[in-house]
Length: 220
Ligand code: PRP
Image (cartoon, rainbow, N blue to C red; front, side):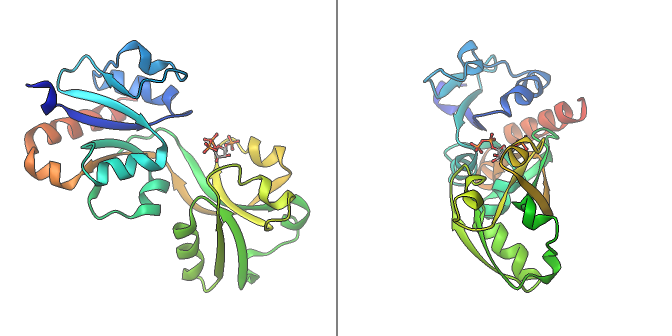
């Protein structure tokens, strides 16, 4: 197959890499050496599969690259998938990596005696304004969101707002900032996402990769 006919897999940078690399190996995808180097400036990586290259982008951008067909395949958390809600994306496989939760947190001294069931209007700092508004609208709470792209945990201490919605894995970041979880919005894990148009125009190759990733996820 010609190099320009390769399929592109978009994966997120950051801490998921440690779990992603063994999953890729089980799918018989071995990226070139620079992929393992977080400091490498290279963004596009060849693999042992001539028909597949990998690009490394920010987690939110994986969904955008795949939705617009710039990458045909991607690895994205259901937090990212839910936030964008792109109709062009299909998420056929739960890869069972990057497991964490999306939660509401607030300062310990408030959280210990607060009852989320009594909220009617709240201000929240988050990277996930759409999920947050949707979640609270469902139970009649008006959520005014202040969108940040990171370091949400700083917001309560600096008086931006009392509450945040963010990913929680070990809980260490919340604890270090004297915050406690008061409500879980969703369980999160990474999914294989695919571009629906690519699924129609290149059905055999795409189905092959979906099966391969499903087997790799099940083999963990
Ligand atoms: C995520 C998240 C929290 C932290 C939670 O950020 O936004 O800050 O991890 O993990 P913990 O419960 O184990 O402490 P990440 O480090 O992935 O980087 P980001 O801020 O770039 O999203």
